[in-house]
Image 1 (tube, rainbow, N blue to C red):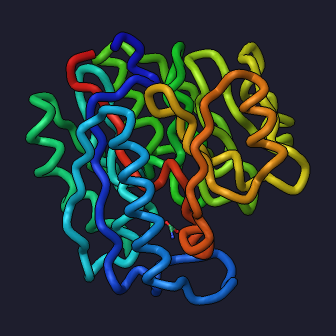
Image 2: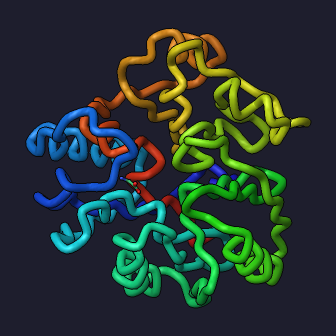
Length: 264
Ligand code: GLY
């Protein structure tokens, strides 16, 4: 194991609560089916575990309907971790719930103190930099505070912009390897990935962009056959997970885990 951008020994997930059916969403596309949501979460955990990683499954938090989307609560890097300050008021308390688990793995654990806001879904770590997309949940002050912290650990941070109406920066992109991203044409058009190799989602399959490269596999939501075929042709080992219920809550593959390797 030697590439911290996609080779992970550990991952933290959280069991969805029964209250997950009341989670935030931009548009009402129907109430999530809780049994299906739980089954999909089990499949997700199993797929991560199959790569050899240690998968931690934290208990559900009924008070926080979106708490299974753990990615928004923290940023895990080589050198240290940062507890985020979510911009959604109903999610603010989730970050403090994650901190004790992170403290088990990291001796250098920092916190975004505010007044700014920042969510992990807006952060993409590549082989050369940390990209942070300003969004409705992540503001300039949050980005600036994170930039100050990660510079201590030797990271360069670049602020970019999440397209209007898109929840998070990583709703529209993911890392496939240190210099290659899977990206929607609408985000690529902003120019934020100039200099990177870019693989585009197929037309009408924009929701496929929220994938994760996790060790030897690319986990992606089921139902996007042309994008899956493109990745397969490029030599990636694709694992598809049903995401129909999380999708009703604007969630995808990256949202469901914090991925890290304390040894790197
Ligand atoms: N439902 C996920 C979010 O809006 O943060």
